[in-house]
Image 1 (cartoon, rainbow, N blue to C red):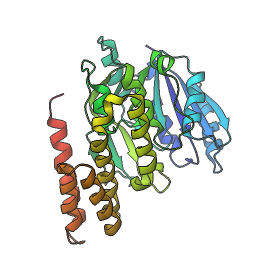
Image 2 (image 1 turned 90 degrees about the vertical axis):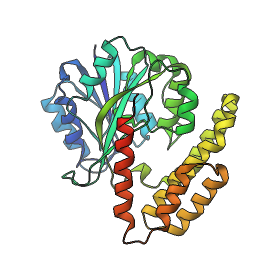
Image 3 (image 1 turned 60 degrees about the vertical axis):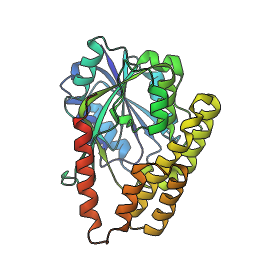
Image 4 (image 1 turned 30 degrees about the vertical axis):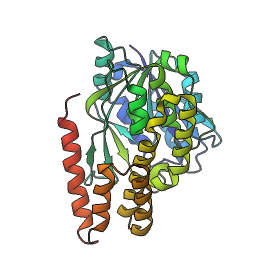
Length: 318
């Protein structure tokens, strides 16, 4: 089994070495056929850093583009990929040492899923002192409701955790280049329409939070997310009964994010909209409780709640 790793970079000179070395140092490194790096319009020292990496690692192939965006950059790399499987890595993230080994073992054991993914570690501190194991929703290759479940829950399947069969892309097509945000969710919905997913237990990827993350403001992503809801209801009318619950989750997560960033008024408005979409959502009321906490108590309670929630998620049977 050969893997083409596609790696995108835009002004990530400080992170790209760690990302690439996490691929080179995989326990299943012998399965990595090529590392295709798209340097997409970087104006920092990314070009020099990538060139230095390519000088010492012959599997690295570098493509240079002029700021075409993440979807187009990934598509360009996929078009150049020749491996049996395609693995995605963003230039500011890095992999756990045995990521590929665990995912390739799933495929090697006869799993028919088109896409294999796993949990992540969310962090911002260089020393990982604030690292948090985020347990994501679990999908199985043998379940028949992958699309409605993914539509409702809106992921999260982090691109950097994905390994997929080459046939998946040949079947459903590439990333939607008209989307500047939410392109990964839209892509996974098309995968879910014709294939299944398989979750691998444990954190596979370290997801870095910093000031340049596209997803740093969840409320800014709401228009694109709601547009995606409408488009998929038109495409698959049987999803219509889930649309209000899906939008409630989107508004609830965005409202909670605003509250966490100190914007309680805006957060409260978004949480009220979430409640109007789905007044029976327990998640909304938990977020409202967090919103009502005194500012001094909120960070500690919020982190404790996250730890308990993700611990419970990890213990749930697949």
